[in-house]
Image (tube, rainbow, N blue to C red; front, side):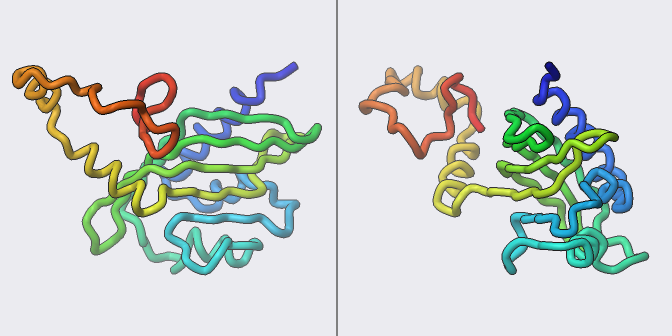
Length: 183
């Protein structure tokens, strides 16, 4: 039996390399090109989900021959994957991205991803990919939490405050996983 998570992680490492190089033909090669209706849902796309090769190619390379991105770095982590058929897998994972668009300041963020892969004779290939950013309220709360300086816990100790006081942790709406790390 193969380890589906390791196999999907290998595809994700290749995806990182391809995005780093902005090689859109190599990006397309990571997809099941026999699938006539690939789905792609980037977080910034307002018009629903991109469907089909012409629209997906236009999204990846909107002005052929003209550089749109100065650079982009995608890093995938926390991969979970399962087989849902003998040749179909669903994976969920986290994306950290940093990028700079021509004429703009750099920006970055974090997304949750759900992707569907199809096993081909030459390896696993994407057939659907959806980015799921946090809703605005949750994102703003996370940004506020991340803006607290590193020495704040020391300050709380200095004044004799208990940072864990205040009752039970809510079951949702928190950025702490069961392991205690932040997302």
